[in-house]
Structures are given as C-alpha cells and as structure tokens.
Length: 542
Image 1 (cartoon, rainbow, N blue to C red):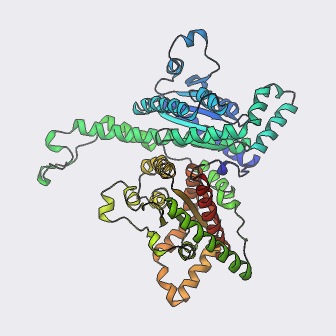
Image 2: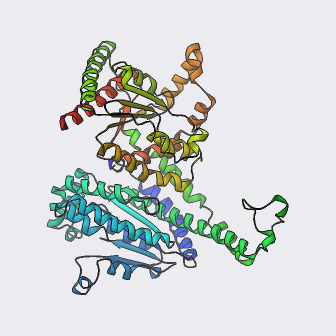
Image 3: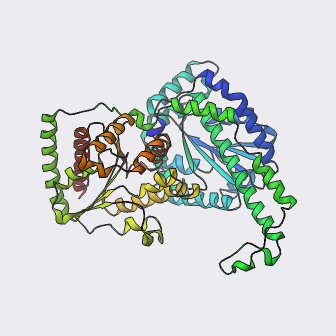
C-alpha cells in the first residue's frame, strides 16, 4: 500500500516557484467562494513522524486566509474532556459551513497509537475505527467535504529526516525520544496504518497517501488535492442547487419527465431563475487556471510512478528459461495436488497492458494443472444479465469449490481501470470501488483462499513492437483490435489509474505482484514462482 509513496519524487525549486503564485491565488479565490457555500471543509493530517504534517498545516494557513481556518491539534484529554464522551472535543471544534478545519492528532490518534503499541487487539482496533467511520459518515451526509492525508516516509527516509532536524539547532526541539521510539517500532506502526487506511478509506472520506520526503513535492500534492476537492465540491453543490431551484419554480405541468409522465405532457423549459443563474455563475467561476494546470502537467510527466521503478531489461537465456520453467511447473503440479487434498482453493488474477503476455503466462500455468481442477475466466464487457447486477456479482458467481483454481484474465479491477479512464463509471463509482474491492478480497483470503494478483507491465515501445508483430503474423492478427490502439493513446491516463490502484488495493493480505514483462520468458517464470510461493505459504499454515 505504501510502495507508491516511496518513489523519491521531487519538485525542483524553479518548478515550485513557477507554481506558487498562481496556485496560491486560485486557493484564495476558492476560499472566497467557499465562504458563501453550504458545507465545511475538514482536513485531517496523520502519518509518520517527520512526514510533514505540521509543515503542511502551516503552509495552508500561510497561503490561504487564516481568519476562515480553524486549526486544532490534540494531546491527551484534559480533565474537562475526560468528563465527557470521547468525541465531544471533536464535535466542539468542527468548522462551520463555509470554513476550513485543519486537524492534527485527530480522532484517529488514540486507536492508532494503542494498536501500534499493542495496547489493544485487532477487534478492539476495528471497533474504534467503526466508530470513527460512523462519525465521518454523519459529517459527510450533512454535506461536509472530508480530506484525509497520510504523510508517509520509508524507514530509511524517516531516520534521515529525524537526523536532519536534530542536527539543526533551530529545529532540534521538534525531535523527541518518542519520535525515535516510534521509528524503532516502524513495522508495527506501518501494519496498524495499513489496517486503519484499509478500514476507513471510503469514497466520502478517502485517504490520500502523500510521499513526504521532498517538502516541495509534498506541498504541491497537498495543495493541489485541496484545490481540486474544494472546486469539485463547489461545482457539484452548484449543480444540485440549480436543479432543485428549477424544479421548484416549474409549474406541475411543466416539470421534467418522469417514468410516469407522458411525452405530450412535457412543456418547454421556463426561463432560469435568479438562483439558477447565480448557480451557473458560480460554476463558471470554477474554471481551471491554465497556468497552474500547465505547470502541474509538466511536473507530473517528470515524476516517477510505481511502474517506473521496475527493471524492464530483466531477461532469461533460453536454456535458463527452459530449466526454470520446467522446475516451477513441476512444483506447481505437486502443490496443486496437495491443495486439492486439503481443500485449499486458489484465485489468480491477471491485469496488464494489451499485448503484455497475460494469455501466454496463463497457458504456462494451466499446463501444470489437471484440466478438471481449473477454470479460466476471460473477462470482457458485461452482458445484459451482468449489467443488471452489482459489478462484483459476475466475479462472485465464478468462485469455484474447494481445492480448485479460478484464473481471471482481466478482473474486477476493470472498474478502476478501463471504466474509470473511458468514463463508463462515474467518479463516485470508481472511487467507491477501492474499498469494495479491498473488502471483497479480504473475504476471499479470510475464507482460506490463495489470492495472487498480477500486473504484467511492458514499456510503450515494447507494446508497439508486439502490435506490429501481430499485424504481420496471420494467426496473431485477430488479437489486435481498434480498441487496443485507442487504449494506447490513453497510456498516461491508464498509468495514473494503475498507480492509484496499486496504492489503494495492495494490502498485506492481498498484495500486487508487479511483473517486468518486456521479456516473456522472465515474466512467465516470475509468475509461476510467485504462485508456487503463495500456495506453499498457505499450505504450511494448515
């Protein structure tokens, strides 16, 4: 889950200075519009010590008008606070509609620290998180915009950050013995953090994991996220008000058609009211700042994604490939028979670029299995029957009985990949899908199923080479479609979606395996070995 926040992304001083004035101006303009809005903005900062939580809060107060910002940080409850329910102090400090609230050490702090230090067990931790989720849902249902930032540093980066702060006489006071104690227990804190994010990152209150090592990158990411969220919320509320105002002012015989309305009952739309016009003016004032977006676009192109960290020149000689392939296939055959005897099922899921080699890898896997004990599910556009159900329905229906393999060639991740990029799912639908998918996968693993997830990655140049090869070979030509070329034109959009998919759904119970696929030989062996390792690990548990 945190791999995407350990990529060493940086923003240069020149880039930051080019961005600073227009972005700051845009935030101030949005803040003025927000003052007239009917919702508050609630921003939470949590994360690793030294990750930049305090600095981010200070920067927001510096760049925006602090008169309309409430900043709160919490320590142990006072005597007055202990005499009341735990959430009393949070309710008391919530910002009013039209204003921004910045919260440090908020309602997540107590359960998180207690779980990280093993003072409470997982059921107690989950119960506390359910209380938090209910609180946030109450606020969101009333219209509040909730943003949650998890400021992350890898263990080595955190140590470097603490050392740097400690050496500077002007900042040494910020590093305490507690910070170093937390660093020594880094793995426990990360385990608790993953559980926290997994349980509480939902569409109306989604966690944003921010790489905190470079202060300029961190600042730009937080400020851009804040800008986009406020702008989107203002636009959505303006559109809702316009529709509501129009509906109220229309005579009954001129209201929009419903399922019961006959075509001849629909009259022409009346002139817009003052309220509707005001809503339109608000929506038009939310147009993007071209200067800001141009600089952000340039910056984004130069930043690494999780896919850029892969070594794409990895390869195997033909002799080594044949030896390793035969070994892993024999190993898988033996493990599959043991799994069948013990009733352990396996679900394998393949995603990746067009022509990445998913089908070839699946064929090398199934060659090791008894044909009676596996099914390969090629996933295409949903049928009419499937469209009438929740999108996960068609995957649930294919879960096999104990001891068998179910192999998905493309999967439920279509909701956050192709449906997101091509616009087949709304923004709320694909954002909500992350938590739905995490829950779906945890149910499989909790049942004892082995779940292995693969993203097969190839470079853009390698894909083009394979497309041309398919055009030239008659028995491969059918594999290449116009849709493949269209998807290639949206490579950058898909890469952004993949990066977020890995960030939000690669968990300790269902991690992603990213496969370097430029060499088909290397990819096939890596996939086979990973499946065998996962299956062997599960069988050792009994």
